[in-house]
Structure formats: structure tokens, C-alpha cells
Image 1 (cartoon, rainbow, N blue to C red):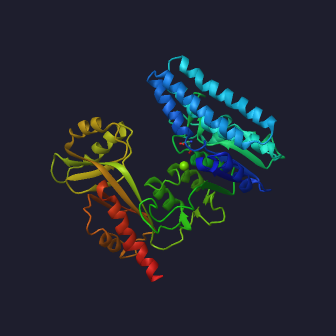
Image 2: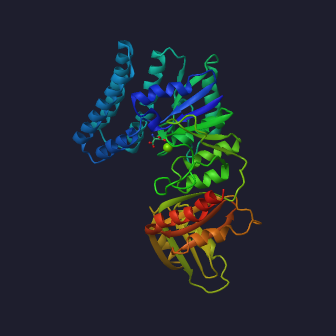
Amino acid sequence: MKVLKFGGTSVGSAERMKALVNLIHNDEPKIVVLSAMSGTTNQLVQITEKLYQNLNQEANALIDALHTKYKQVVAELYSTEDKQKQALELLQLHFDYIRAFTQDLFTIHEERAILAQGELLSTALFQLYLEEQGINSVLLPALNFMKIDENEEPDADYIAKNLKAELAKYSGTNLFITQGYICRNAFGEIDNLKRGGSDYSASLIGAAADVSEIQIWTDIDGMHNNDPRIVKNTYPIAELSFDEAAELAYFGAKILHPSSVLPAKQKNIPVRLLNTMQPEAKGTIITAESAGGSIKAIAAKDDITAIKIKSGRMLLAYGFLRSVFEVFERYKTPIDMITTSEVAVSLTIDNAKFLNEIVAELQQVGQVEVDKDQTIICIVGDFLEERSGTGLKIFESLKDIPLRMISYGGSKNNISVLINTTDKVKALTALNDGIFERRNINA
Ligand code: ASP
Ligand code: MG
């Protein structure tokens, strides 16, 4: 059994849904995980924003516009009157459900229920299309098995037990369709795995069902060696280790949700990144093994805040780092990068929600400086201790760019530097020229 996850653009129109059938219709047993049609989750977010502001008329206008868009999809997708009618009824149900929330006080529970409609719609419409094509498939409701606990962490045991129970009901079936992103929480309410969470769903489902491979299908041909939106001549990386892929995903490669690597790694299930627009392209395969070679890829993460804390006491003070870290722990704010000297520590966060509170508490420990609009440039590869010269290549390339922090040696897969966001394009381009272009010329 395999898991195949298709993102929003892969189900983004009637035409794309029709094309999808060619990729999944064969004898291989599989669970197909779908995102909402592209744009839908954003539109649902806008609707919830209006509802929070009590702008019900505006919310209704947005709901009507989305409903109309879906009616158009139905008109293009189905060729039989029977399925057209069924699909329109289905839309009516879902959009009436969304409209019902405009009547009453709007809370976070309602918000989550609305956000779940995108995946519920895409999977239901696709299942109807498969039925119309005479293809045997079963729609598995993710809300029957996908669950997070009170810490908003996936409940792996619950998911495995309930998913297996669902699958066992249909022993003759080879093709299952289910929703990415949505789940139930510890209270049994509808919840979600956060934006972009369908990849995470796919990986959790793959781990729960002990599949042989997890495929993430998007509209780019794998994870690239640099940001293709910024740098020309990037290329897909054929092979990555779980750790390298996790670093790249976390530090900016948009193609894969960072949390989705761990469940696959724990069960040692290969993850393959593939392109629906170019299904024959090899893409990227992520496994326990690294393909060797030193520098594999570069990614950048914006909106980083750097905080420097200078110890009030002087040399040889112990307990200083602990008191610094405790502040971040209290505000549940993860630290990304950290560098230290004897009297000061610099670190970065990407969630600045509690910045003011954090700074106020850190001021009890020492002198605090804050720099906003920073970017982490993360260089990923296999940096064995015994390999020399990697640092030289990187810093030589970056010689004209002011570096705020450098982190090397934390893991053998990552070298990170912190720069001003205004220098990002320059830095990514310089690294590309210095590392990859040169390699291409030599090759
Ligand atoms: N539809 C959700 C989103 O847009 C989940 C996903 O597509 O991964 O964030
Ligand atoms: Mg995605």
C-alpha cells in the first residue's frame, strides 16, 4: 500500500481533477490524500475573518462567490445529469452549513468547522467523479481516524487503530480517498493540522498504515537546491536524507510541510516528492540514507527576529543560559538559531507573538537588543567533521554580505547564517554562484 498526497493545484480545477485519475487509476493499493482546491482555504479564512468582525453581509457575499465558483467546477467536471445533480446537492449542504454560522456568535470552534469544508468538498467531489467514471473507490472520512491530543500533537496510537479499523471494513478495495489537513482534537471537535498540514496528514496516515512509500505530489519537480523563485538555474535534488529534508523544509523550502518528515523517519518509510504536471520526472526521494556529496541545498526563512542578551554579571557566570531559555519555554516560543560568547548569547525566533513579554523578562537577566526583519540562510548537506573547506566555500561566497550570526557544528546537516532580509536575494545568488554554478562548470 502507498499513500499519495495531492496538493491544492493538483485538484485546483475540473480539468486537474480529471487528469488526476490517470495518476491514481491502476491496480496498486493506495490511499489518496487530497488538499482543498487551490485558493479555497484562503477564501474560507477570509470568510471567518468577516464573521469575527460581525460583517455578516460581507461574509455572505464571499460565501456566495465561493459557492458560484464550485458550481462552475461541477458544470465542467461531470458529464451525467445524475452526478451533476448529486454534486450540486452536496454543494448546497456544505454551503448552507457555512451560511448557518452567520446567524450566531462566532467562535474558534466555528472557525475550524468552516476551514474543514475545503478538504471535505474536494474529496467528496472527486469521489463522485470516480463513481461517474466507474472506478471503484471508497471515501474515508479523516474525522473518523485523524486526531490530535491536548498538546495539539497527533495521537499516533489512536490514528493507527482507527485507520486500520476503517480500512478493514473494505478488504476488497484498492483505492481510498481521504482528506488532508482536518482532524479531531482532544475534545472530539473538528480541528486541523495548521496551514499546509495535508503533507503532515499524508505522512501520519502512511506511518499509521505502515505503507511502503509516501508520495507528495505538487506542481514542482521535487525539492530544489535553491529557491527557484529567487535564483535562476536551480535543479531538483535527486536524493536527500530525512534529516536534510527536515532542515530544508523547516528553513524555507515551501514544497514540504516540515513536520511531515518525522512520522516517515520513525517508520523508515521513503517519501517521494513528485510533480503532477510532469509525472515522469524523477523528483526527490527522501530516505534514511544521504546520497553523500557535501553541500546539497540552500533555503531561506524570513520574518526572523534576533535577540541578543548580554549577561549582567561578568565572566564565568553559570545558570545564565538556563534563565534565558526558561523565558522562551514559558512563552512556548521555539528558538531556531543560537550563538554564544562568554558574556552574551544571540538567538532567533520566528514566532514573535510574545516578543514584548519575552523582552521584558529577559531584561531581568541582562541587557537586551532586538533586530527584526532578519533572514536565516540555511545551507544543508552532509558536513562530516573530517571534511575541510566547506566553510571556506560558503563564507567566500558571502564575503560582501554583513553576517549577524553564524551557526556551525550544531548538526552535521546544517550551517546557518543570519542576515538582514534586505540582503537575501544577494546572498542566495552569491551562494548559488559560489557553490552550485562552480560545481556545474567543473562537472
Ligand atoms: N488546505 C490547507 C491549506 O491550504 C491544507 C493544505 O493544503 O495542506 O493550508
Ligand atoms: Mg503544501
